[in-house]
Image (cartoon, rainbow, N blue to C red; front, side, top):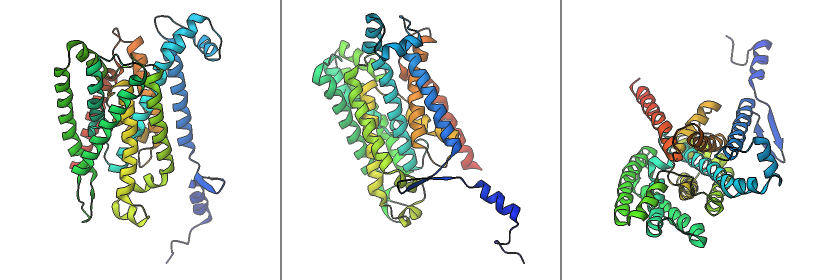
Length: 371
């Protein structure tokens, strides 16, 4: 009777042909995935193209070749003013906000094993909005200097972190294995409830503000890049950089957390500690992105799921989710300023596309549950 080791040379060659080549650098090794690398290269090319178009397009059109010339130090004084003082901060803010939301969504969905676990659904962005509206509704959005650079970002970060801690504590309980911890499904349900409560708080804050202050805050709440400048860009960029460093350092841990609890524990991962660390990093990215442009909805929800389908990976890929999030916000900004008859905030455009995508995820999950 033949055993598993009794295989023909042809079968052995076929099995060896399926193996992927490994790359070893300075003691580290990784599997070379050609499809993933090509997909990432295409995503980077798309992002660079949309970024250049976003800078060149507007009431004062600047050709793409001239844009590159201006970025290199050339061009006329008027062109340098339009690009460096207006369009470049807006385009960079769109890239950073989208990348931060996509990264935060990928982290939360990977840890909680739920495609609906995104910062906007869990209430993180609503908590950040509460903190920011406290500042915006009291100043009419006319913050300058230190207040513009630190006031709104710090308030949004505090609101997001407090909301995340409250949701985490409320979701703490006994898991299916009998241990104490946080279950992904329970955390999502509690997050949805907290999100609804926080939206009511934001509405109440607007009723307590003056008409002018409420109008400024309401414009920010739609997710707008109109007020983007270098002062709003820096805190969001710092938050994105911190989260990327934590995600890169915890890449192996993040991959282990995608397995079941028993498997993750066997691999030597301290589940609750690592969950709290990575969720905290995602909260920082989402809160500071919200402070920069307001609550841009559905980017953190859709970007990881689109990346997962493009790369055909078992979990939500971090780098691809970050790139797709940036592409989504930059593309939404470009569409709102060029294709649509009215200049709409990017949050309106992303919600119009992300809402149907969320319904698709719900219908797909329901069909899987009934099979």
